[in-house]
Structure formats: C-alpha cells, structure tokens
Length: 380
Image 1 (cartoon, rainbow, N blue to C red):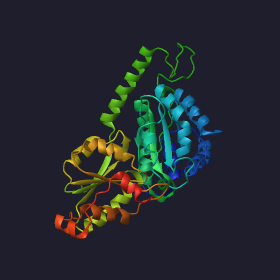
Image 2 (image 1 turned 90 degrees about the vertical axis):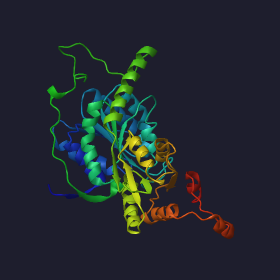
Image 3 (image 1 turned 60 degrees about the horizontal axis):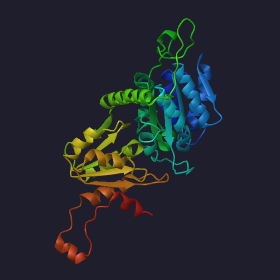
Image 4 (image 1 turned 120 degrees about the horizontal axis):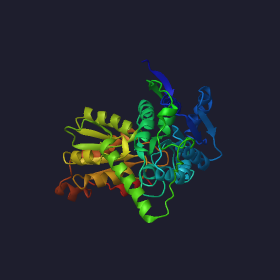
C-alpha cells in the first residue's frame, strides 16, 4: 500500500474513521483542533455516523458516556486542560465498565500554559485519570504512523476489556507531517454485533441498567474487584515497548513518545563515538513495561530517563529498577523539547571516567551525577 503525507491530528482522525468509529464528541483546543475539524468535515459523509461539537469538554465526555452505553464505537479528543475537565466523566465510564477511546495531544502546563508540545500529562493519564481505583490503558506513539496504528487498534482493545483506551501524544506528533500507510476500512458494527450489555431499547426483553452508582459497600467492592481482575489481565497481555541496542548497553536511555524518537538520534550519535548506549521506549505507559526494565537494569551500568517534564515517568522507572542501577534524569518543561545534542552531553557526562582522588584534590571538582531535582533546578 502506498504511503501518503499526513498531519498527525488528521491521520489519527482518519485512522479512527477506518476503525469504524460511529460517534465523535469534542470541543476545540490547541494543539488537537485539527482532529476535531477533520471529524466535523468527514463524519457526515458516512451514513449512521455522528459528529457533534459540544459546548464544553464536560458535555463532550458525558456524550461519550451515553453513546458508549448504547454499544456504539465512540471517542473524543482534547488537550491537557480539556482532559482535566473530562476526568469526572471518564471515571463514570470506567465505573460503568464501558469501552471508549480518548486522544490527548499534550500541551505545556500547568494551568493554561501554552500550546507547545509537552509530556506533563503523564501523571494525569497513568495515575489520576478521575477518582477511584482504576486505570485506563495508555498508549504513547512516537511517530505519526504509530499514532495511526495504535488508534486503529484502540477500539478493539477498548471493547475487549470494556475500558477507556488513551492515545497519549504531544503537540509535536499532532502537528508534524510524515509519510503514513493507512489501514484498511472496517465496517461499523451491525445490530447483531452489538454487545449484549448495550442499551438498545427494551422491546421484547427485560430492562437493563448501566450505572457507576452502587450504594452498598459490599456491592461496590465486588465491582471494584471485578475491575481489578480485568486490569490484571490487561497487565499480563498488553505491555508494549520498543528497545534498541540493549544487548551490550552500558548506559540505557528510557524515554517515551517524541522523546523516544529524539533519543534514538542521540543513541546513534553515541554509538558512532563508540559509546555503548541502548534505548527502552515504553509504548504502553499503563501497563508500564516494568519487568523488562527490571531485567535490563541488571545488565547496564547506568540509566538516563529523558522527558519533556520535571520527571514523571522517572518515578515508574525508579520503582521498576528497584535500585539495580543508578538512575539520572534530564528533562525540559513548558514546551521546551530537548535536542539530541543535549542528550549526548548527558551521555558524555555519565560515561566519562570518574575523577581520581588525587585529581579531585588538585582540581577541587569531582565527578557529579545530578539527581532529578538538581538537573531541573540547574536550569531555573
């Protein structure tokens, strides 16, 4: 199949259409607005598909909730502040055990911040996407092609596990243009293919109820136990990552999304200099590839985590590594994107031989490994 040049936001929208999405509800916010605009233009061309620009993100997520109750393939998209507004509704969707797809094209924060690329929604998506004991399945592409592939797959994953699936990218991926091979078209679900739990009218059958409200502690605990069992299945089956040149790596880079692709450039430059550097790029941020990272930590001398934030995935890396290797962090914030040269400077620093005691006494300076906080504070 021939490749075509696509902008990230529009390519994600086209992938969702080809995956059989039937209902899209959203509200414009930069840097994801082109996704909504594409849906506004294209969805009315297909009978039975619904596009609606809601009056707010609050309204949009509750429209997603209603459509999901009907067994409809549904989605929304937004950017960081808009996702914050959706968090209550997403918790309702999770508590009702419904499938839905959400795209978050991250921007700088906190607050309104700016519209530049950032990775500062990591905590929001992997730890606190609404109240209660649940997780969304969070997938982080590093290219427009991967964003297309993961979006296309996300609807089936959502239906398989009756959960929210998040495509977590940033403004760089949303706005960049790259060659893409688009997936084939899927048919939308027929009435016979709708799930048996869906609310499709009660003629000829008993009434059904879908709700996240359970007023008895015993009943709510049973719901939560069922959710946890399902999430454990997701953890067993859906952990995803990419690794490069890890076999002999003395220093392991860990980065996701846009920073994953930038670290690949830094890795190749380091290898050309004879430095044994490898890369682990988590694709599923939840579930996190903790077991593989634990294994690699036992074979490497040092780990460098690189993010476009103050160190959010860093905490998951530290928990996975369990002290098997020293960990450093390099991050930029507020929409600043670390360049490969900056990463190579950190690699040079970490792989330089330590200064001996006589040299230390003579120079007054020592080999220093910056902690995460110090690395951020040094740029303040």
